[in-house]
Image (cartoon, rainbow, N blue to C red; front, side, top):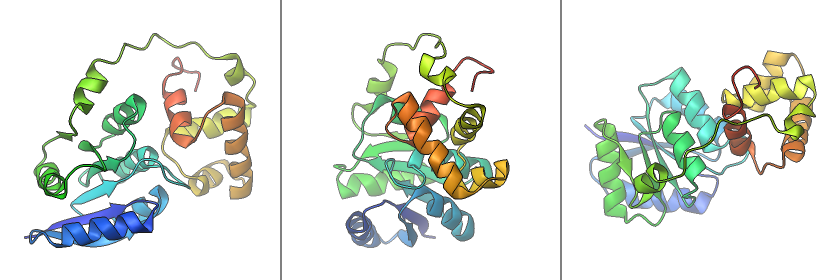
Length: 214
């Protein structure tokens, strides 16, 4: 019985390359592709793959938020991260939210296939040096709310909390009874005020706030 895989990457050339490599493996079947986290979650729920091969940095919804959302909706689907980013925070958050493995895109195709098989069986897979990178990272002190956080409006704090829960703009809009355009404006404002690069960093920021502050 073949291992059913969903490919998630915002670059079509990467998806095509991965698809070609993995389709050559007799025990792996590519059941679908997605170019961002939001579509990945939707397709994963519809297609029910065994393994989702997930990138981290993507538009609309990043991979970390997608992992969290997917694990909440169907914890039986296993996620293996495949990305170019070996940032400690990305690795830690991806694993914390339910990823079964974290590999870099320079992983040889044979090793990638083996990692997919291992994750399908329930094992955890980490690229060379990544486990040590996370374990040897200095402990994070109990955070205090930054002055920038206190400058967020009550609505922006609500949006930030929902970002941390893995919701996309559409879901946030529905939860708060506002338009997606308004949500997008709030997200941009939050990133600017907190000097953050993307939604993943916003989710990480919120998860590190003292209890009751997010």
